[in-house]
Image 1 (cartoon, rainbow, N blue to C red):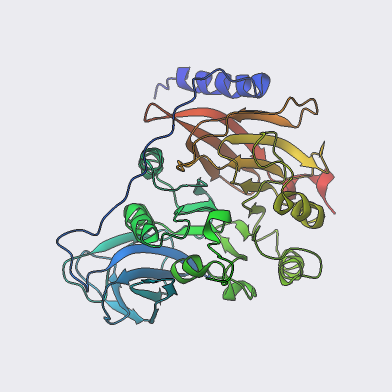
Image 2 (spheres, rainbow, N blue to C red):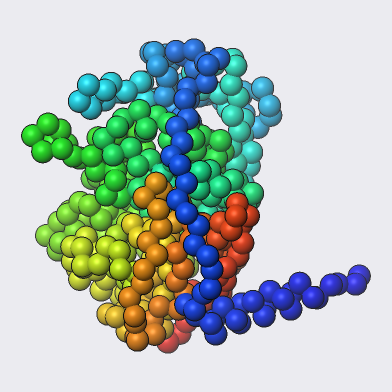
Length: 430
């Protein structure tokens, strides 16, 4: 069979040029777009499920979360054929108050055991008008992650979500700053409706950012009230005592979600949990380790320089990740894209993680367009544009990372690089 090798040659050429050109990028930066708000559908009733999203719980279970305005049973019926529900599971519901706002009923149901890489059809609260479908992650490599931080709710967010929807991804990783509600609780509802078309079909695994804290002195002292109530992650299964930090295995990857806005010093619960979690990793089972934070530890943008959540967390936890041979660390917070080489202690180190800032999902605050003049050479690509990333882990040794710029609503691959796992590098063995 004849094979057209021209696209392959162009791909290789683009990859080489990306490495040669580094952070020298010529591109007209897009302007911020208006905020959007997604109202409740007019045809829905108080018992209609809305804001449906799923997340992984262990190796073969998924958590289904949704909201109804009134109280209905927390039950999910599911099966592998449309309209045929051979299994069911029950869970719990709760609500929360924030100043004068009261949330709807937030339902939490874990289903399974499920087969890997399989499409299931399901409905929530036995609602006859709405059927959803999902696909479970694969049990083994390869696996494809979509990565996007600082999403918010703007026209650019819509574009980013549209591009992610076209990527045939298995799981989304979000390094903090989800809704940009910033105390206005109905915006959490709007965000849930905005992401439901994607988040109801593939697992969305998130960690928190500064816009998710929502603590008000004297008036509302509890941080992360909405975030914790609405986005329950599998922290219990990883031995964590907080929804703000946790880990999980998927296919051949161990994913660590860290909390930039909770205690992280050596006496903290998070630090001790991270030590224990890293010590339990089996690189034969999960040859890749990926970590997510919100405030970046490496950043040459002028935005968010010198913040304690970056400087001190890096001081305390960078040695832990380095000594565990973590492969990649994703961050958000800075509204731009930047990729560093493998680095440790501000120096290039072939056994250190690759640090990637991807806080460019589409937030309302716009892009961070100014960069510092740097001479260290550890920042290899940086650009202030909206977009998302895709990490395709092909096998135990190789993965491909692509960053997709939102260029006039078209997904354009602007940065591509191949990674080799540190577990497969004999010189990085401990």
